Image 1 (cartoon, rainbow, N blue to C red):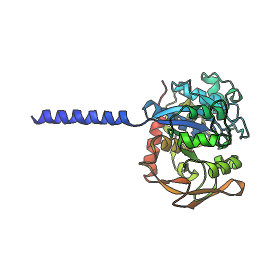
Image 2 (cartoon, rainbow, N blue to C red):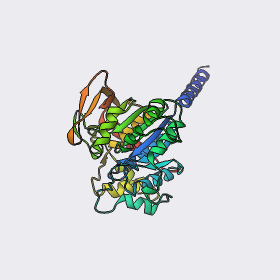
Image 3 (cartoon, rainbow, N blue to C red):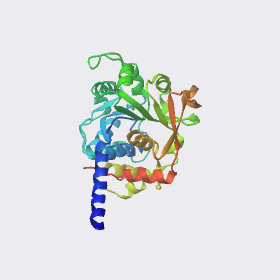
Image 4 (tube, one colour):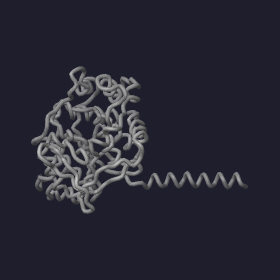
Length: 328
């Protein structure tokens, strides 16, 4: 009898785990990236597709806050490689940075569109990111969307300041308040400092941090700076994988042992929440002159910043494993 009881128990346990997985809510994410200056954006988008393939995430849109002409083609290449060529694309049309990769040798931003299929020839051909945001938000259930930004806050600023239009009778701020659960942002340096994403469009960063009507979780520079990833995916040397190609090419110019994982941490939290890897501290991010930010701890603050809860090595292993995810 005991083997039978054990078999039935294991069967019930497996069924329970399957039911729990089926009942886990899918997180609807809009991914906003500056795709080009650094290549952790490539790793971040890989994580997002890995979570989508596991059923945890619905990628509602992928937009660029960077106006450089290679940004959207690179996003489209990655979406296509992971079997989602129809994800809506958008790009900043207002005031926003225009920055290509700083590498002086081989530029992955030029190699991806040259080697892999895509239909948008240059970023300026893509739709207005604000219109994409407004359409996706207007069609989404209330408080169902998580915005993940791993670049400049230019698009979010423009969305906040958008008025009613043919897409929705609500202002941008009203749409966000109604449809967005939270925003997770790779940005800032805590408790005080200057960070690239925040500094490049300082005015947008100030407006968004002061006016965003939903909570913002910040993954600061000091978080991703300690997490080096990419060596394993680079070592695959897979010519069919744009992710492997980017990391192999770029790590050879930077550090073969890995690149900081700033953007990946934001996707990890946006898709799965802070547990088990991070704690949060509540407070207010305050913009100072010159793109510098500081932090004010407060029990009634509008913002949250990530703190390490698990060892860096454990988080590194998690992110590196997800970056090994292959396309369809």
